[in-house]
Image (spheres, rainbow, N blue to C red):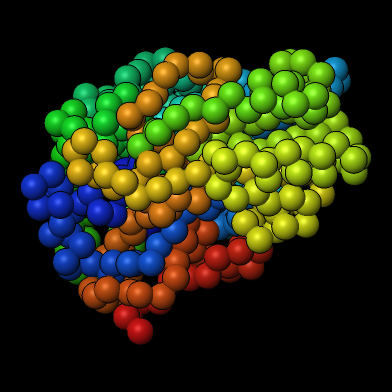
Length: 423
Ligand SMILES: [Zn+2]
């Protein structure tokens, strides 16, 4: 069977791939099919993106609606972090299922093939690549073999986020996964430059070093792929990111504003629950058909920090379900001002009471801002011709592209296999 190798450099914006900071990616882009009009999904968060890359579906179809989600576990809606190791089990207990669409790992398992994922981001983002355990998933919080059977600690991935952990993971991925285990699909998800971007200004020396770290790790994988398949006929190699970042301008405490406006009973009440997702928020309602939805929507129209809001049926315009408890999605105001390091793009963010730290001046994402919606995607091998592809593409096209390369059916995905020659 053909093979597919995917590398995700978390949060790497297209315009920050420069000769100075990312010389390998710059050169790789020149000899790849380069998708110049590539976008993330909405919310543009890592966990939602992971589910969309794995399923080829929009959140409306796969059901994972953000880095945080409100669940009713029996005592009314509460906001939970999707990133926590136990979220997958809590979602399954509360709703009877995990993702509502099959992953690449499941589709491969049906034909007796294997998927292996190494991920150095949050456990939630790792596990939603394959939440029902059809393949192998490795993450520092716990690694699983098929059947969601935990691997012993010595076979797991005991690494920290950042350059050092990414490098250990990448070297093992190249040697063990690509050279020896040789699965039909292998995916490597690097923590950089996202990890550093959340703790330092975009374009700062620290952030630029993190971009270079990702660049070096992509080179390690690319060299291994080239050694294993010099003609590129059998191995499809996709390198990209899940979303970009904006610089945080200001933090809005939406819970407090709703309470102050008389629209929410108390900070922890279940009538309307804010699920913060960086530069966007989803609002869940105990009564999704009740009048409170329209009242909150009218309140948001009066707020100068709001970018756009999508209410009820309008959620479909941005790939979100219309019939769930989440009845409003609101993006926060963005602008193209540059930060002190000449990186354009600022956005307001929603305060996250689960992670209440001040990130003003640092990177963030989640919404529809032009920079957070600028991930990159390069394809080599598998018949892709070098060149700039200007048609629209998005994260949901990755799974159908992999399925076509592996000779499998793409039915049930929202995306489409990407063209192998520039239009
Ligand atoms: Zn991410």
